[in-house]
Length: 261
Image 1 (cartoon, rainbow, N blue to C red):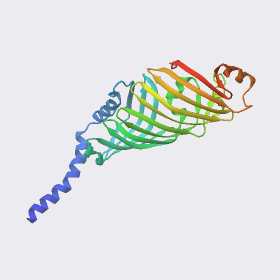
Image 2 (image 1 turned 180 degrees about the vertical axis):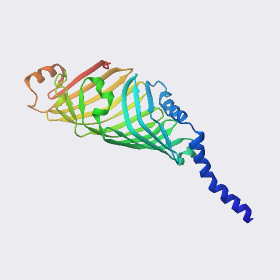
Image 3 (image 1 turned 120 degrees about the vertical axis):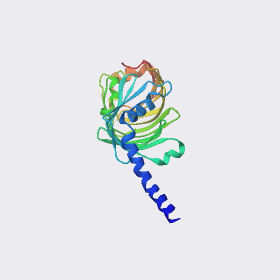
Image 4 (image 1 turned 30 degrees about the horizontal axis):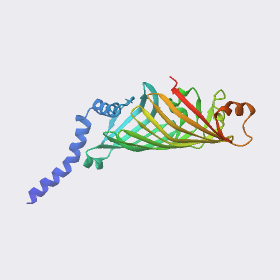
């Protein structure tokens, strides 16, 4: 009986060592990278693709990478640098591989849970808007720091975000007030090739605006509600938005057509 107990104790002690050896020797880095990239590319009707650069394995089921680069429609969309991930065995009961992840968007912090097949929750604190490549396709210089919560489930990404220090450098925009907004917050969701904008609100010295609508297959079908503060607009700005008036102090500007390429 004592011998059996000693054998069981020895086996119990050996199992973690065997698992670490299997992770270190038997699981190739290329396979892990392939699984991560295919988890994004394999989503139904999705135009997104992920590239994992400089992936490395560490001891005790840890991963690190120089960067995770996301593309949408073959264009750079998001870059997370200094990525690290550690395996979380608690998700195995649900037949999922789970990782606690950390990274950077510029100087801002990213952390959360990523599970395969693709699911998870990711939080961003003070991510730099200037380091999000997707925003550059609008030919507008956008600066500020975004804090957000992203949930991923059932092939849908839901994003709740807030930018308290927005700075838009676009004096040539056909939309008046655009470069006067200093705060932004909103809720949106992404599924396949469709972006649904529940509401994005903007606030600034010349008033308030709210953007709603959708972008499907890179075609915009949105409306921008403008509520300028009394007496704040210039004569030119008032003239430009005059044809969109719905009621005194309330304007609705349609935004239609393909996204900039």
